[in-house]
Length: 227
Image (tube, rainbow, N blue to C red):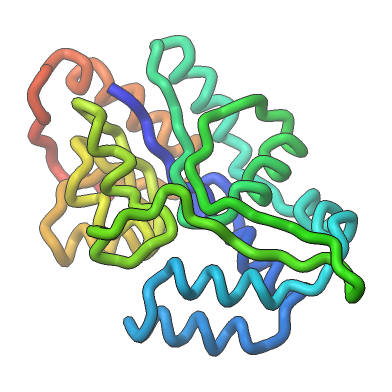
């Protein structure tokens, strides 16, 4: 069994990519976001086009990322998982560099991070940013930069934690789902069983209470929705 956790809006209090774009990109990023929300483009194209709009030095980028807070209960959650021998991986359709920087600034060591890869090049006009998608899949129905369904596919049983649109598809594939935000509405609409939470302190209480049942069965457990 392995824990897979979204980052933006789940571990981080705010969406780190939106924080960066709001500060360092032209307003065009919002129009691109709108196209994605309307289903006109996939999330991979959306992210590539948005990241290319960033105009900031690496120092400016780092200084901003260092102001992005994470859920204060996440460290305790990691400690509990480590004590139980449950591996935790971050799987995000966000930006790997942003995630690494924010976690390091909050005193969290090395975790497997599966995310889009930031590339920065120094040019005459300043630093230019682009995005590559090493975890994309040609069969991804969301045209995502990170196909979360493909990421969890090789694991026998999965605990998935998320909050938003990039978690919709994978929530139907995971063995156990912890949801907040828009993911709660999606799970209700699609009839996907889930455990609701507001933050990791809240989640940890539920996690501890259901874990004996989770670990006792080799098959996918049946459980009631808790919101």
